[in-house]
Length: 364
Ligand code: NAI
Ligand code: PHE
Image: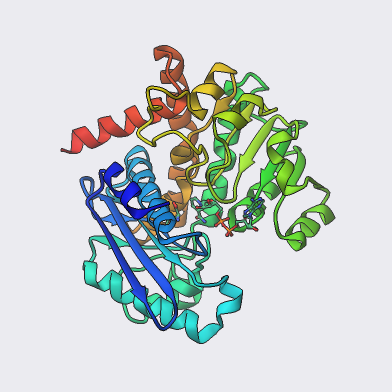
């Protein structure tokens, strides 16, 4: 994707791009909105097809963070960092990775707190510890250094809460998942924990990951492994996208064999314009799912547990119990989104955006 194609479509406040010749890494920081407070959002480090794709990902994800913070009632704006790596992390070597983190820390300092970061795909609490050696603007450091750790466990709890609310909305039971077939795509920090919660609650568990070891570990605990390429064609009650985003476009939505979609991945729907409205000439995935009666728990709501954890612990001084209580409120928020979608004949994504827009307007 060309950078010239991406930027004019974006309504954010700032997007910085930096290249480091020595490591070959590109650094993108996107600040979408600071209306509710300083922007915050994780750092994603991975290989991208082009710099334009990295900018597109950062800007889309930053926009999603604005909605997420607003709907979760957190006094923060939306931002995101993307580090486009020259090679997969495992091939970079520790010295090159450390230099990359040093430069990212310097970029964060340059913004002076307008944007703070935390772990996301490709970065961990240990990486936040390294950032914190030279900047104050990295959250979610490890417990060993006095930090609150990554938000993955809280994210998983929130996703599981969202699954229960969505299952009830779909009429599949009273909110329990016992006996229902749940398919978890992505067994990383969040997905693996959601899978555990689902299995403990008596669900029939299907899993998929590109990493055969992660699949084998889940299979050893009784899950059935599905090929990664088959997740959108495998019959299940609930599909939980917990890998990278963009799994479901309109074409996939037309044949998706499930009753509920609720997962942690940011930007699960590939083709809506993230303002909640499909382009006029285009029936996007959210609308197709709604027309087919598939209940979609918008990712901005379902995966807010990580943001609640990071912002709660680092900015608002909450205890873990307070974080848990606020994370469980995701269930009530989703029930409101579902009720609004039903009442106004709109998609759940549109209902969620309307909720965010009201909160942002109130703050203005
Ligand atoms: P992770 O990097 O720990 O795990 C991602 C997993 O997905 C890996 O096991 C990877 O092998 C797998 N994967 C990647 N592509 C796949 C594919 N096509 N098919 C099957 N498996 C695939 O990431 P983490 O932290 O678990 O996050 C998962 C998603 O949730 C991401 O989209 C992230 O942005 C989102 N999220 C994470 C939060 C957190 O606190 N960690 C908070 C909110 C959202
Ligand atoms: N990266 C996670 C998310 O997308 C957690 C996070 C939230 C990290 C807020 C930093 C700040 O929600």
